[in-house]
Amino acid sequence: MGIQRDRVRFNVGGRIFETTSTTLANAGRNSMFGAMFDDNWNFQFNNSGGGGGGGGDYFIDRNPDCFSVLLDLLRTQELSIPPNIPEKLLYREAAFYGLLDHVRSAKWGQFNGNRLRLSRSVAGQAPGDGTAIRAGPDGGCCVAHGSMVHVYDWMLEEHPPISLDYQRVNDVGWVDAENIVIGVCERLGRGDGGMGLFSSSSGELRHKFQVSHENQIKSFTAGALSFSPDCKIFSSCKGRSNEYGIGVWDQNTGKQVDFFYEPPGWSLGDADKLQWMSGTNCLLVATLFPRKDNCYISLVDFRERKMVWNWSDIGAPFTVDEKRVRDAIAMGEGNSVCVVNEFEDLGFIDMRISGGSVRWSSRSRLMKGKMPDEPCYPKLALHEGQLFSSMNDCISVFCGPDWVLTSRLRRSYGGSICDFSIGGDRLFALHSEENVFDIWETPPPPII
Image (cartoon, rainbow, N blue to C red):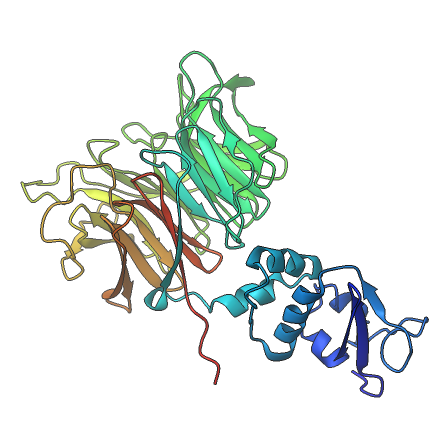
């Protein structure tokens, strides 16, 4: 970058600012300021004399107070918001300049489960038990409750809620920051269930995903959801005839591209947990207690169109101190599955051995007694090499090759945690009482 004409002047809302092209380059190519540079990162001064060396200025008809804060952010990589500037106003201005990522990275550091701090709590929109909470890729989230889905952006401003016309929401997931997929139950005899792609900002229905069998459209209930990097959407499907199993759709066209019908004796259509495993190009499918009396976990290879691994607790010697599986998640390189029971014991199943037993570990147990008689069962998540498990009003963090308990996230308000989700460098925890949800963030490293 040339420095002989490095000084740049802006007139923002009538106030003059002077900076350098070196500072503006910190905004990055995708920002408004990045567009002022050529391919070699040389600043393009205009012909009217604006910018360094001339008498003119670049005029921007925006808020000068916010511009001052954002310019200081580019200079120092620190975010200092004066009390007279509302944060939402600053975020709006940052979005105009293409600097939201800079603001977010200055507000909190890279995600680390052991350094998470409670940022704030948001009151729910309806009383009673929530269905699910899902973190968005940009730091926002959506909360499903009954037949409603409430969507929040990363500033935690709510978009228009999505109503599913009194159909119960089973699962919801983010395709990207602009689109979410919602799976709902079919109402008996109505043929109105299934799955749809909605705009996260407006709630507009963009695609309705259908199941076809022998050139006929079949009604179905969509259960658990999962997504693959090549724009595939997977859902467990339960129909009224023979369309039980896992459906696959193209998220761009909405067209069904595959369907895996469940083998006799298995419950793929009832699955309440799907996980795409990129390393193996397979889908983990889990149907868990208490949805079924027994737990079924399988690995489906869609290239070979067959189930390549399976495990069930049928015939397990349950006692009063029973260890029924409540959630499951594939680990690391895909050689094992981690499961959790109602005592928050972690168990591990070797996927290299079909039908192998669970190796339970009680070192992680946090509760002395059985969990309360309520629908808030333990949930698992794996993120950035750390394992997370919810239990009552607490989320435990496990690290290392032996998954040692390293920290706990807990607060008393809101009741037990019925679901949690990680994404956009945040952890969201949904409580059963009034659908209150918490936002946990990693604070930025101290400035030396």
